[in-house]
Image 1: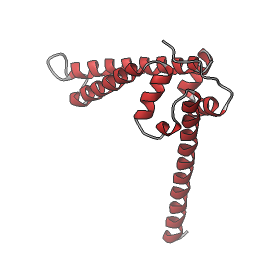
Image 2: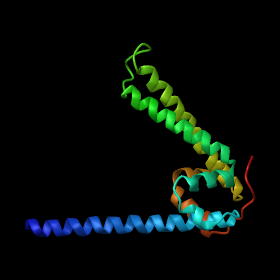
Image 3: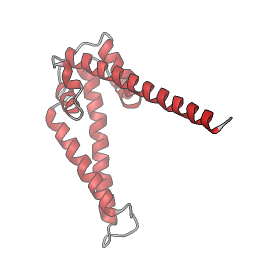
Length: 156
């Protein structure tokens, strides 16, 4: 195979991958759109990054938890980055920043799991559906958006 043929095949492969990713993204946005509409929100809110997560927290739990999650994520990432990933530096060095940052990541993970549970309950599903949202989010968002799920209200 010549270099030009290999280059053409690589270009086609990259183009195909990009087309598939865009198609999945569009389908995911449509599922979010439908889910938002079921919850009484305007569908266009699903298109705006970060804002769509705020709305998801608002319709499934409470909007204030989005801010807790966002702040915990930023603090965790900042501390881990400031530590330089050096977990052996001890208390006097930057090691404490790594561990505190990791604790903030743990808080973020717990809130993420709780938010998926609240989303599951808000649309009339249980723990099994919550696990689906956690591990197969794309598929289970499609089920909420395009399936027969009914919005039951935010879960306090």
